[in-house]
Image (cartoon, rainbow, N blue to C red):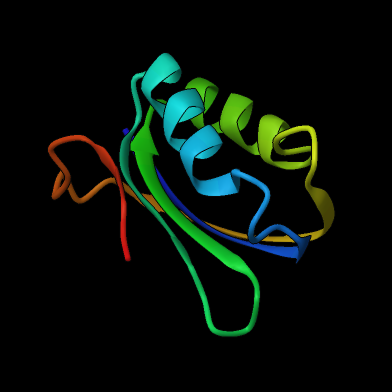
Length: 90
């Protein structure tokens, strides 16, 4: 099991990005969280298999229909098994 930390930049706030990310993560069986940052970016921490995390990264490159993703910054690590589900952080 692995973990990713992703920062998504562009027009990604106010376009249903967090809830859409949560739905995709649940579909893939990932655990972790998504939250908006003050910099107008979105941060995601997710744990799962390398295959499922790669599918999530592929989805994050486009995001939901109204999003304009300009850049992804991705860090991979070993899972720490600290999440119970995938949630939206305030």
